[in-house]
Amino acid sequence: MGNGLVARMFHEARQRGAQFMFGAHTTELLRVDGRVIGAVVVRNGERLRVHARQGVVLATGGFPES
Image (cartoon, rainbow, N blue to C red; front, side, top):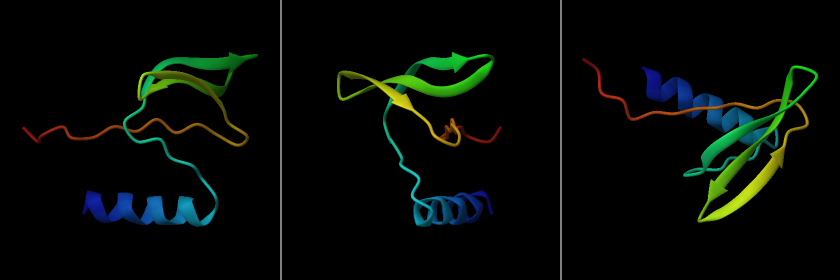
């Protein structure tokens, strides 16, 4: 059931113009006045500062059930 939920959220987010960075490693969250406004990520060996207009979503997966 989890895969279906994530697939639907991914589809809806893409329809609304969200951008995704698969395989990026987050090294730092960018904060202003206690709000997260973006992140510093490393993707393909390149360090990038990513600024968000409406929100930041951190997601992970691949953990086996115990």
